[in-house]
Figure 1 (cartoon, rainbow, N blue to C red):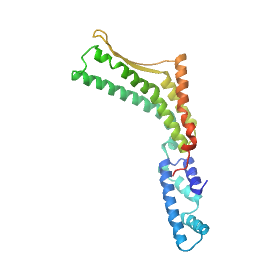
Figure 2 (figure 1 turned 45 degrees about the vertical axis):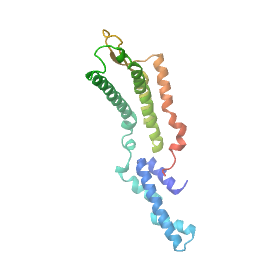
Figure 3 (figure 1 turned 30 degrees about the vertical axis):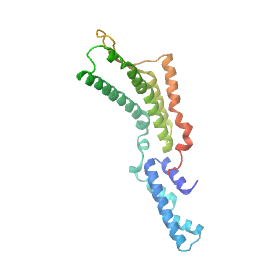
Figure 4 (figure 1 turned 180 degrees about the vertical axis):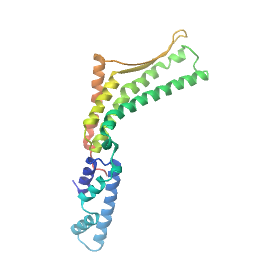
Length: 231
């Protein structure tokens, strides 16, 4: 592991946000290369030029200490680990469910207002059943998986402690696997269409929870790639 890689790893484990670490390491590499080339142009040997370049940059331990002492560079996951790993993913998903449902209902209402969908049940309204089933499957089953996997991938890249992200994954799996939502669009005018939301636990839901949690763990399969030093 190079000095730059070791410094980046130390900063990430210390809670500095990945974007700041990547920017800082990039700047240090540029300064180091400029200093090394200047020494080589002056006729200094390769080893001495390398040592002189690092002397200009300063001791890596001191560089790390100066960066770690700046709280504004810390990642949100390091500042608020319980909120970031536990509550934020669930709140984001619930907000997404509410916003997406309102958006879907707004489209249906707008189509009715312009006369493309008549009031009450109709074959045209019933034709929305398949798209609505796909919509709610993606929203209730797949969205928690994507959010949970993104949370874990971010934690791995940030070199964060995994306790709170794993708790967040469990919460997301329980919420997504136990939730149920959907729409039933009527084919005939005298039957009311309806929208349903619910939460329940059964053997079927237990399987869904297990499958969703397993899918959220997929970032572990590319852990080596996620934990590469910032370029």
